[in-house]
Amino acid sequence: MSSIRIDSSFDSGNIEVLSTTGASARLAIPRDHMSEFKQWFHFRVSGAAGRELELNITGLNDSAYPDGWPDYDAVVSEDREYWGRASSSFDKDADGGTLTIRYTPASDLAWFAYFAPYSMERHHDLVAESAACEGVDYVRLGATLDGQTVDCLELGEGAKQVWLYARQHPGESMAEWWMEGALEVLTDPTDPVAMVLRRECRFHIVPNVNPDGSRRGHLRTNAVGTNLNREWAEPTAEKSPEILAIRNHMDATGVDFAMDVHGDEAIPAAFLAGFEGIPSWTDEQGERFYRYQRILARRTPDFQTELGYPKSKPGTANLAISTNQVAERFGCTAMTLEMPFKDVTSMPDPAQGWSPERSKLLARDCLAALVEWLEPEGD
Image (cartoon, rainbow, N blue to C red; front, side):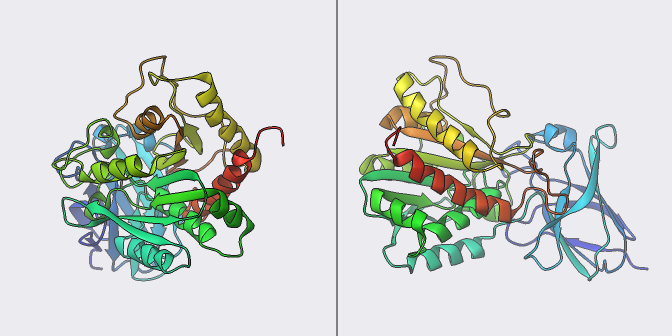
């Protein structure tokens, strides 16, 4: 029987084929262009119908986040609509650290990825459909180094300036699934959560901060290997025009509330990171963040506060990171939302793990929490 074929020359595709034998393959993940980061993979297997695939992704001990591989199952789809999980195991002692994926497709084609991809075509559909909704304004913030656009959607008549932005790290595709869920809520004229938020707030929404990295199949960087979430203190047109464009527009609009949406490779939970350690920290500003965190934890079991990142000590925050820079620059409530590449251990889903569907549902819960957060405390 002939060997399977593996391809990745498509939007967000990324894999190196070292060898194939029958239904088995030895693979490796290329690094982001001009960067040391590697973790994202996305490829297609053909000639696989009814055959048990054994796909060995090697050399993972020097990946960006090696702690992301234990207890991780790759995502797989045969129709590119429903993304389930393929049984996977990690052996750190095999071939420089090897993830072995086993799966038997029913059809001749199967797609595998680190997380359910969010293509640039789907991004353009999302922007077009949202911009066509009543009350939504489209703003072209600027262009990337590959010549793509940095798209922003604005809506709402209120005084509170709310910024939502995602995929600074392009491999964290769950972040744009979250954005799709948020925009579905906010553009629904009959949704009561949206009705309140549109009345009280002016939203500035950037569904994909890093379209170049997204299309190139990067984990963490843009077209020239820049980690955009380390550029917020001094963005430049040469290295980070995406952040320069967004920050300039923030300066024009002001910011009262900001959420930067991400995914975490290792921690099996959804959580928030704040801005502890900024030079201008006040307990009053910090309490506004902690109050939102408490509201969200009460609203959904998909969010928790036990697992997360350590807090920075006073005066040690890295102001090149978005949440810290925005909180410091505008004196606002800013935060980073992290979702898992794996699953949430509190309510696991063996079929899908953390999924596009769970990401979109969490977006609605985040917006509903914002409605409550806007109310005076004690009401």
